[in-house]
Structures are given as C-alpha cells and as structure tokens.
Image (tube, rainbow, N blue to C red; front, side):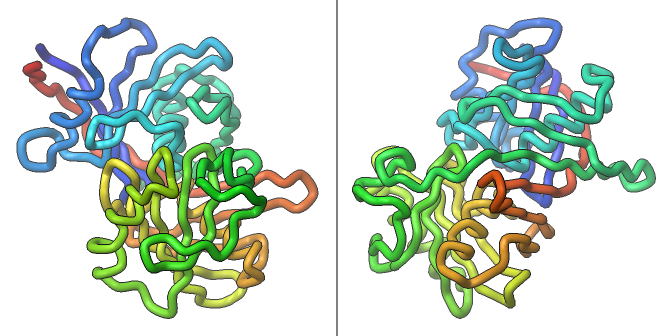
Length: 280
C-alpha cells in the first residue's frame, strides 16, 4: 500500500514522519519502521515517527527505532514534530504541547530561518530521573554515579529513556561502534540503554557521540545530550548551560537549578516528502 511520508532531521538525527492527524492508519508500525528506515531498500532514517491527536495534549508523537522497537522519547524527533505541526498549521501558536510515552512535553518555536528551511525549537524535557530503579538500572541508589558496565565506569541517567554516560579523554570508533552494543544490552539495564561517550572541552562545552538503543550510532540524540550534561554537572565537570557538539551539529542544553528541569534547544529541518510503497 502507498504510505505518504515526510522526512525531517534535527542535527542530523533523521526520522520519517507519517501524518495521522486527520486519518488513522492500522498498520504494523514495528515492521513498517524497520522497512522504511532501511537506507538501501527504504526511505532511510534513524526511525519512524507518527504524528496524531493526543488525549493528554492536543498532539501526540509515537516513535519507533529502526529495529522496530518503540521508544519513549526523542528530543530531536519531537523538535521536528513541533516544526511540522506549526508549518502545516495544526498549531497556530508558537508554544505547543506534545504527548509522548515519557509524558507531555512543552515546546516553543524560538526562531525560523525560511531561507535555509531551519526552525529552532526549545523543548522542556522535564526533570532528569536519577533513582536507579526508575531509570531503570539494577543499582539501588540515587544518583547512580561511577558504576562499572562492561569495562567502563559511567553515570546512569534517564530523560524518559535510559542513558549510560561515559567520560573519556578522547572518543574512538572502537568505543562507540564495538563496545556500545555490549553496554546497551548489559543485564544491569533491564530495558537496555542508550550509550554516550563524552569528552569535556571546557566548563561550557562538551563533545559527544551516541549509540542509540535500537538504532545504533546516530549523528545526534537530544535526550542523550541532556543526560550527558546532567551527568557532567553531577560529576563537577561543567556548568549548567552547555553547548553539546555532536557529529550532526550542536545542541544547547540548560539544566535549571531553580526548577530542576532540563531545556533542549536545537534545529529542525524538513528534507523531503514522498510516498513509500509498503509490503507487509
């Protein structure tokens, strides 16, 4: 069957979007996500995002990784969803709320660059989850600092989805591509985990590469950038306002002390649209 889609990217973290705001669709989205995400035989993306009406907010986002597993939240994907909803006129306001499996997220369109097709969006990512059983990680303490997983010592944090942040002097392909898959599936993480390798540049800047649970290495990860800054602050490495350098671009993260909430600001851009022929 023909499936109309739109492809958007945020700092190189690219997703295929299906608009279900007006018409529902009864498809096996896990299988569709695997096929449409394939970079050789499909559209090519880090995953599939469904945009629909919400019950707890005006809009809802469902996100599937490229392996077909459904994820709770993605900071880059939700920024792109906000851009799409605003550009298509579903939201007349520059401030909007989107329901996710990690709760309702509030977003704000902060800047538009029509010449380059880029929209900058700020996301209230909420408070970081630091208690072991709630991340989840099989360590009974809060925060979960300096634990050893598959030969690496790091910090476990959740931003609605689990992350394991490792600070290193230099980030290598071996760490990200060979060791991250083992960390992702370590028994210490009952729901698997995303993995971030982070190099501290100075108090206001870090560099990060990410291995996303269910997708592999991606060019950026919004929740991972947030988790890395939280871990960096907890470890005394950085300030609370940090620019995160990723392979696909920079994201600005602020962990506010007064309300304990993390804010993510970054770009979103529409790449192209089309129709995908889906064969179950």
